[in-house]
Length: 250
Image (cartoon, rainbow, N blue to C red; front, side, top):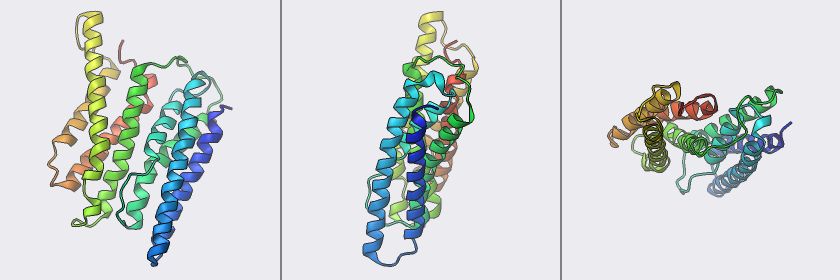
């Protein structure tokens, strides 16, 4: 068993506890109790993020003994787990939804790692493009949770407005654009043409176009914009999780 598994398992438990506290705290009427619950959930999410970072580092280090997608999933969960920085009082589902992407990714990474005893067929080496695309997936997971919160917050509630979604979605799109541009330049330098038409390149281009569509959606239509962000984030997460099985540069 990989040494990443215990850390990932503890992080899954912490995130599950954070989600449970957020739901239970939504039934509390006392303001001081609510504030204490919010602070506890934030601390638990930071702890879970730290555990996942350790698990991700161990997973990448021992990548040859883990299934190909497990290190990607754990690292994405590590980036999505820490809480966003704001002081608004939100409804309980608005507090729970941002936790769910990290919990889902961490759980998937744990199950994937435990469910496959055979060694990974992929190389144990780590390429910069693998790390960069996985970071994109983690940012997309943060944007996914924040955008999903938009659907459970009243239209006029400032706490549910889209600016909280902007930084992870913008960062993910910017980094994805750099990866896309780097892939095209590498092809041009090595082979004399920019586009090879491989499965990886087509997938990367499709995800990039989805994020472009999300970025072009008017910000005043925050729920429509949230729909585009959710779809683009899901596509990017799937691509990042399966990146080790795609050959983008060949």
